[in-house]
Every structure is written in structure tokens, then in C-alpha cells.
Length: 349
Image (cartoon, rainbow, N blue to C red; front, side):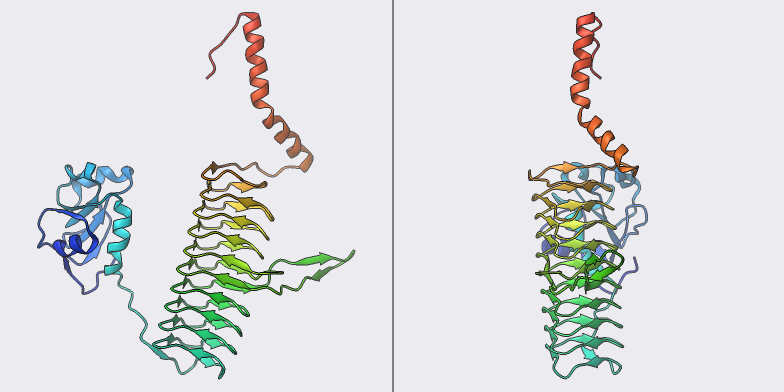
């Protein structure tokens, strides 16, 4: 990562982030890098044990690591109980991307009834519709379109080409990455015997404070009522959230994951890549879904981890396969009982 002009001594970093310093407090740091690529002016971190072998040969000026790894560090170190979290906080000092200066680009089109807060930055070719309310310090990147009646809380940042539909309500300090579409119509259609008819999507989308929406993700507006993301939800790129879905606070969904209409995802849940929740299903707080898992029924016990994917097959075959899978424990017990009766008791492996 290219460095910016800021430099900090290790003593400064130690004090600012409440980390224990071991080594030269006057050593200057001007950027961050991986253990294998860092130079003497950069700081790295060790969180994943799989990279521990790189610690002994790193040329970093300092490493953020756990107490248990400090003795093997050949350079200065900052000791943290959670190195990755400490790195995340410290790395914000070295983000080379400049903040957008306040101002409105000459090509922006802003409805006279829109209300703009203080120190907003509005980029080229932005369109802001009637009665939109833009909070203080918001940054709206080039090509963004905000339909009528929308709200952006203070400190939001929309990168290029974000689209917000009619009446979408965004909380404070929300980050939305390029190409995201929030508030498009949900997949509401009714079959009329020989053709489809559209079901009006009359709700909107409400997103809480401190959320982050990845590039090209889509959050559909509610059909009746609203689609809701509570505070501090984190969506990766290419995530699909259907109409009237509720995502609980502090939940994170990895790339290409999502939820179909009216699903309810609890608080502090983790959904791996391509994990999906079927429509109208509910999963409890602190549920973890491994990558590619498919939830087809409610998960009611909090704090559990789930995994599972069966390849597509004709539905009757799939139903028979699932029925047999559910009987595996019973069949195993029957086999063991038969072996005992025959005197061929074998160890269960």
C-alpha cells in the first residue's frame, strides 16, 4: 500500500491505541504492509497462525501481535489481545485515499426542495431528487442518483454510481460502495394463468447507523412494510437482500450471500460466501452459516453453526435422499446391534 505523508513514532501509536510497546519507541512508521512485503518504515500484523512462519524473516519496522508471539518477533512489536482489531484501528491513520473536499460539482442536478447539510461534497453528474434530506458532512460520489424523499444521515459516504430508490432512509456514517442499488423493486409478481403481473412494492428500505454496503450489492424495497438493516451491518460485494428482509444489528454477510423475501436474520450473525436464507425463514442471533450453506427451515437455537449444500437433482430424488440422510443415525445403531448379536462388534470410527 502506498504511504501518505503522515508519520508516527511507535510510542505515539502505542499510546494512541493502548498497545504495549516492546522495542524502540522513536522508530517512525509511515504505512502498513504484509509481513512478507513490509519495509522498515511500515508496520504489519500477525493474527492468522498460518502466517507465523513469515514472522522470523519480516523486515517490518514493527509487528502487531499477541503476547504469545512476541518472543519470536525479530523487530519492534506492539502487543495486542486481538491483533487484527488493533491493526484495523491503526491502519486508518495510513489510508492514502484523500477525503473529498466540501462543495457541489457544477454538473450535479439538485432539486430545489432538497435539503443539504453543512460541509457536504457532491460529485460530478449526481442527481438528488425532490425532498431529499442530506446530513452534515456527507460525501456523494460521481454518478450517484438519489430518488425523491430519501434521507442520508450525517457523515455518510456514497462512492460512484450508487442508486437510492424512492424514500430510502440511510442512517449516520453509512458507507455504500460503487454500483450498489438500494430501494429497487423487490421480486414481486403474480401469475395470471398465462402471464405475470407485477405486485406493487410500496415499502422502502431503512438502514441503520454505521452500516457498510459492498459494491454491486442490491437491497430491495419492501412490498408491504420496509426492508430493514439494523445498525452496524456489514455486506460484502454482490450481496442480495430481498424485499421485507430484516437483518439484525452487527450481522456480516460475505460475497454473493443473501436472503430471500421476508427472511429474518438475527443479530451478530455471520454468513459465509454464497450462503443463503430461504424466504420467510428466521435464524436466531449469533448464527454462523458456512460458505454455500442453504437455510431452508428456521434456526431457533442461538449461537449455532450450520453448513450444508446438496447439488440440484430431480425433486423426488432429492426428497428421498434427504429422508435417507435423516435415518443414518438410526441405521448405524441397527447395524451395530446386529454386529453385536453376531459377535462381530467393531469399533465405531
